[in-house]
Length: 459
Image 1 (cartoon, rainbow, N blue to C red):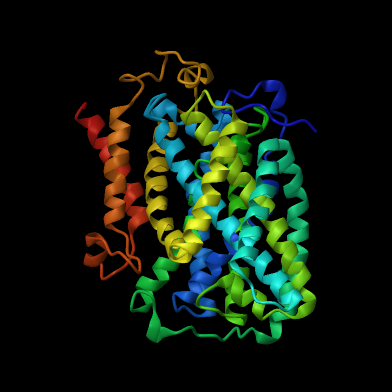
Image 2 (cartoon, rainbow, N blue to C red; image 1 turned 120 degrees about the horizontal axis):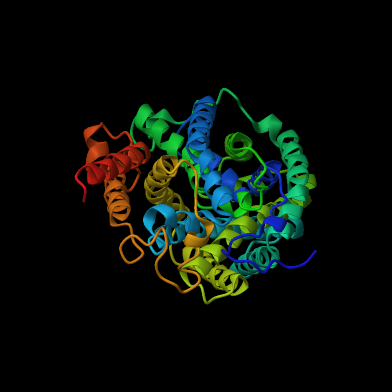
């Protein structure tokens, strides 16, 4: 199987031979990882009980998947990634907004994958050898996970598709083994710690979990779905592409997040999801845990790093995709070391979820609204003007930027940020609503309203 050489170019028709089922394979396998499971632990850390966490995760994931599912039509219609496809609405240069947002989202999750996978590897080795975990072991673990995901990301689409066909069943077995091992310690009646709710009371805390532990998962893929749908045959139906994306995101994200909440209830450690998982596991589970650290990182880290390479390739067209992938891998790894040894990585990563989700929600709301207005038709040649170093074309707008769409994105994102309610920051809109986080719906609704207003005024 040869290494992929295409970046954000238009995928030739002869190479578009995948089916919509590919989306299920990719997103189911890729999300069975510690970096997704950690969000289930986060819901318990917020002070919620088991069933409260389950409801928040399922509601949030369902709503997020409904919102994001249609984004796969962008890549499928334009035969390129979602960032470049958004040039039809933001302008061929304005689509750099999507590349920037996608790069930040993927960088966050690649760093989270390297962090959790490396920590699990180091902690597992320490327990097996009955020694204390050191910073050297952590560093080796981080480096090992980083190198593995880089190799698969560089080889590209078909390699990642093949590895995810293996990851899903392998991780499924490992999850079942973990449930068996920790079942005696799990209490389904666990009611959480109501006197220590993250936001002081139940409903604000529950809504925070809905967004960060549920909806943020699908939203993190808004620029990535096209990386895979662009290879789907043009003969496939739009309905099938959207439905398979919905199934893939709902199942692929809810299962590992719920499992993370299960582990948190059975083996809670307020300082580290991985630490509690490893410390409370029986010895016979330690080797499977090491496999979870490595195998699970392949899927999640691989597809995010692959997408990061495409996003940077879209920002800097002169870079080859392989070069872009190597650059972003190095940056992500440095962020992990900085987060672990200088800052509080757990706080830094989880708090960034809300802010990045707002930016992504505003962008996708505008993109899907204008995509529907265009009846789902995109000009493949006009989308590639910027990559080809040319000017003009159907999506040139004003010097390559659609200022109305850009203005709506900036304003909608600002409104969403004002609606955030987290442990470290409460915006004035959320404060007015008694601490309930409305950042994501506020960003989406306000973006479309502002865009409509701009058009009505002819600005």
